[in-house]
Length: 245
Image 1 (cartoon, rainbow, N blue to C red):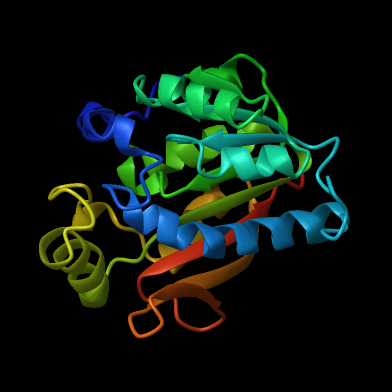
Image 2: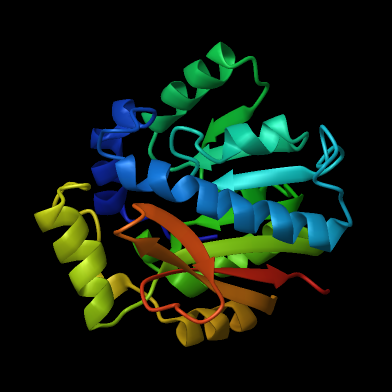
């Protein structure tokens, strides 16, 4: 299977690898967004697999893949909730950062420098695929999402988040985050690679998955926090889809 990795995109994150666990560093936006992302992820997994989030390890027995795992900001909480976690990243320098932090945290996570396509070709299968803020960085979104489909068991769940493409998303995600707030290095995102919710739903369907939910993730500059929204998908948003076949 051909790789959808964009070398220029990988190089950006290679350069930032050591900063992953600094909540005030280059990945500050992700640290701020993480509680909102986790709220959506855990509720969708619990609903799909009939798990009780009040239990100590509600995701016991579930095999989960975190694609584009970075330093492990999502892999670690998933492991704490009981999932068997594989964290995969195309940026090689992210892996030792993630491994060291997991060891320091007493967590057993299988981190690998690999791609979705290579994992799918090797026959790896998962109950859950987390595909968060990756699809806007690949060279061929449909091929990439098809690999995600292939990585899921029948009945498996993919959570996919990305950024909408419109004037507001340019103002917020690029001009605001990279130029004004300097939360991210300039050039982290390319507005032309952003994907609208309707485009993403169409791509997910073409990849063989059944989209079942989507919500916005909205930043409140007054409260300085993120929350989920049923209606506002104008900038950041997240989707859930199921492999039915």
